[in-house]
Length: 230
Image (cartoon, rainbow, N blue to C red; front, side, top):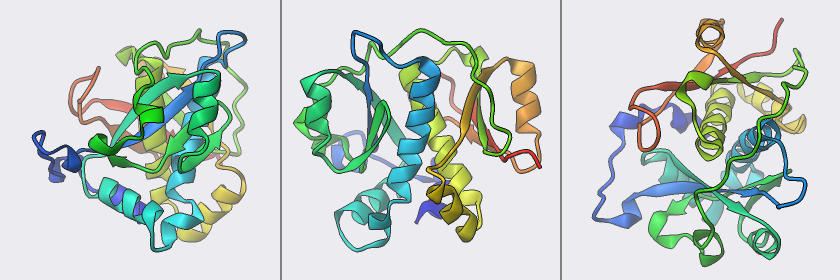
């Protein structure tokens, strides 16, 4: 089913007057007031959590998980990032999804059916301080973010999640399973326009063009997933 995410988003339709046709994956970011995670850590966690939902064993079985992903793949691929702390973060752990570090990604649903424990959470206010660049592990894929677009943390989290999905979809099945067994190890780097363009031109690169719902112009290349060196 994950391979279906490669369909051009412009081929998917939705009716704004019918909320059931607008499907989205909710991402909740744990941002405590004391010692919050760094921006880079949130982005790494968001990418891993998103693809983990898509490649969860339950996605291959009949039932709620598979149905939710299927409806999402058949519509425009939307993600909504929200913030939580304290009890609100604890409460959402009971809802169907996958938590990786500071981010929990949920099985997609129509925007009219988002559980209250999630829908009550704020969408704004997700930004945290940028940290120093972490050392990059050349043995795992890297998702590069186009820093010239000045995306908020929530927007960037949605984009790296999409990049991880598309990267997994482009892998041979055995390679995707091997990546899953590694916990979807990856790097995230925010780079300038020159380095971003170089990353997009790397053999095997998987770029993401945004539909332009929020923050960036439609068709903007926001992020790109690049295979490990060698």
